[in-house]
Length: 533
Ligand SMILES: Nc1ncnc2c1ncn2[C@@H]1O[C@H](COP(=O)(O)OP(=O)(O)OP(=O)(O)O)[C@@H](O)[C@H]1O
Ligand SMILES: Nc1ncnc2c1ncn2[C@@H]1O[C@H](COP(=O)(O)OP(=O)(O)OP(=O)(O)O)[C@@H](O)[C@H]1O
Image 1 (cartoon, rainbow, N blue to C red):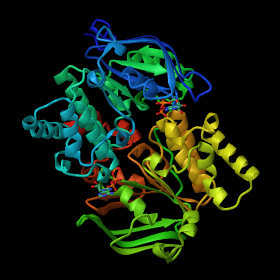
Image 2 (image 1 turned 180 degrees about the vertical axis):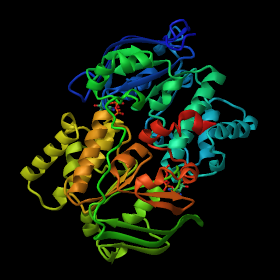
Image 3 (image 1 turned 135 degrees about the vertical axis):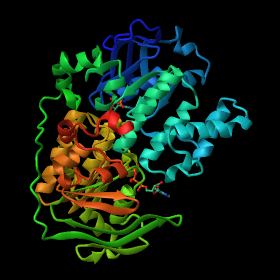
Image 4 (image 1 turned 30 degrees about the horizontal axis):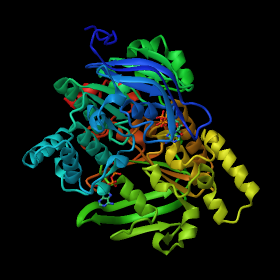
């Protein structure tokens, strides 16, 4: 088959006909009269602005919505020629496996092994076969060593791999992946895509992937479907056509063009002017931390200067989030010193510490404490005795800035993944602290919201706030950060300006990092096939 054609000649697998969907709590219907067909053996990417309804479609396709939510659907969905409503309970979820955007919401059991055994039990797999099936699937996602681990103790990227393993056990005909690489380190992300390609070939599955950045999927994707802001399909083409002939439509929607197609990129790269490193806000000396007697961090030295934009990078499980939690005083060090403005972090009063230091968690849901977006944005102000009109003014400003103005009274947990992430950042900006810790602040964002978020964070830095930024996106590190720390084997394996990191081939490989695109483009290094072969 000519790869440039859609898979029209393959057999249809799932057919959506005039399908519309509305949430009861939203003023306007979300999805409008959608009609499309997914074919056997096809790999399709679904793209669209944050909040356009991508996750909602995927939950409708496997019959979870509208049943599990307060919403209305109209139109029909057929799987293998049969209406999805005619499938026996539980059968459709097996045929159409879905890995949720937030893998945590998918787990029912405490340990990895129990979670996978639970899935097999539901499939009536005999106990004697279970151990073998569990080992095989953990091997496929490179997580064998975590079989006995508690799921809540895994890092974000590790959880994502376990969620995939659980769904693979179902041996679905159609696999839906909602932003599957969002929390993976750069090399794991490439390996994951390679794994999906292999699985697709071996199991002849169809795959439907929701992604904001198509770059690394391009080689294996047959088709791109784009959902517009008005809830209709605005493009459905082979990637090459979508990103050339339809590029203006996509750009208007705020969709990331793959870097290879994005002529607007400045390949010489901006170079953030180095901050004057005279004022240290936070200093870490010889910091060590263990979990269950295992060293996670050892002998860490790190200074955060006023107005510095500092990145912390490293492979999944390297200890990046742990380091942020130690800095924020949320967990206690085993040894060493963490001083904020010269005073040990443990000596600060909780209320004072929170004013000085803001922390945007890796999982936004861990941060929400109220029932509405408005309450979330005004929680701190209320505690500090601000008046109603001051709170309104502040909340309205933040909702406008973060495109949440249609969600004032929405429950934070009902927002889309990207909206949740933006809310979690916004809540830290009611009163700007001296240091802001961001754990992967841009995941789940489209091109426009990423650019806006980064510009906003950069403005904070320009006004003197220190930014500590955990990310897997080396292009952002290259563009925005003055300093970068690489965590590897519990230690700091590199610290300095990003440009000093990009020629450390051995370290980049060990720490599972990837060169930023502007350098890959010139050197042709770190391309898809270099990384997986
Ligand atoms: N359970 C729910 N109840 C009410 N509204 C919801 C619910 N889930 C999602 N929404 C709203 O529906 C819209 C679409 O959300 P959805 O998660 O489908 O978007 P998305 O395209 O996947 O976004 P993102 O790229 O940010 O993940 C958003 O405005 C969101 O706030
Ligand atoms: N609450 C916890 N209890 C026990 N172990 C944990 C806990 N949280 C994390 N860990 C373990 O500590 C190590 C470091 O995890 P951490 O979340 O800091 O990594 P990370 O670099 O942020 O990873 P990722 O990029 O995947 O988010 C991992 O091996 C993880 O399994």
